[in-house]
Amino acid sequence: MAKDIIEYKSEIVRDLSSIIEVPAISPLSNGEGEAKRAELIMSILDKYKLGYDVYRYKDDMGFDRVNIVAYDRDRLDSKKRDLYLIGHIDTVAPGDIKSWERDPFKAFYDSKEDKLYGRGSLDDGHGVMASLYTLRYLKESSLEAKYNVKALFAADEELGSKYGIQKLIQDNIFKRDSLFVVPDWWTERGDIIEIAEKGILWLKVSVIGQQVHASTPDKGLNATLLMSKLINSLYIRLHERFNKRSKLFDPEISTFEPTKIEQNTDSINIIPGKNVFYIDCRYLPDYKREDIIEEIKKVANEIGVKIELEIVNDSNASYVNQNSELVRSLTEAIKKTRSIEPKLVGIGGGTCAGFLRNAGFDAVVYGTGEDVAHQPNEYIVIKNLIEDIKTFIELVRS
Ligand SMILES: [Zn+2]
Image (cartoon, rainbow, N blue to C red):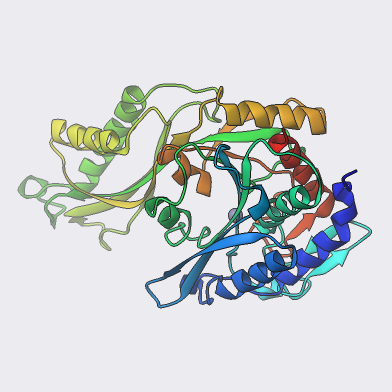
């Protein structure tokens, strides 16, 4: 008879504590990347007799960025689909150290509260441990699995996944019918599955006029007036043109908000020759970034305003079909282990799942926890982690 996953609790606390104590901060945030933490994870995999492949990439600054795919060698079956559980092994920096009650890189387990403290304990210690222990449990129990279950320990998630999931997709390491579960976003009751993300597009818009003295407006072109006209026209037109609603999202519509305005002239008596403002667009998966940019250019042209556009940040919208095997199976597993009917929602986005969906894979995001990611005194409630491991075991068992 298989052990109950709860019997692994003290080992889960021990392994996660050891992982927290090896920092894995991006070189872009003055860290060394996740290579050392990856070495530790490999030694843990060796201890549990799990097999793994390593995908190592050099980043722009010369650091090794390391991704690991772990599996049980004895169970690989080419007739079965691959199901990946993904945890990212990099973390954000601790931020203001004075806001931490303890050293962010010394793990501390409060057994009364069942909370394990430390940077990365939840984000994404949760995903790493859920993936690792689902795999370990399957190996050490006699449970049959429907899939080739694989744990993917990904690099570089916090700053865009360039040397993590994006590179793995480019290098074609996944079979076309692979499925992905990403425990990297949490709700307190574990009653929500994230199946979609809105696209994000941040644009810098420069409005070009002609600078003159304020007493002779006829001789110039007032960029403030032009900007005001443009912002109003854009606000109306973009909402009209991209007006679909989706009950998955809150709010249900695409949003186009003019936000920051750059300082133009220091003097009240100068008609500014240039104004720069920004728009934050969050659009439904029905739409394409290029069409939004086209529409903005069209509006400016129609009202005779000369502009220059620059993309400051963008990520594509993504979604997985609500009726796909993956969404249905996870829903069933949650019903069975948690006795709750999960809701399917879309969010603002940014996980590994978005890249995978845009590459044509089915990927869902699910986790249970109090959302303290990126905050000082970050912690994970171990009970939530164990509940999620139970759900993932239920998801993959045959
Ligand atoms: Zn994360």
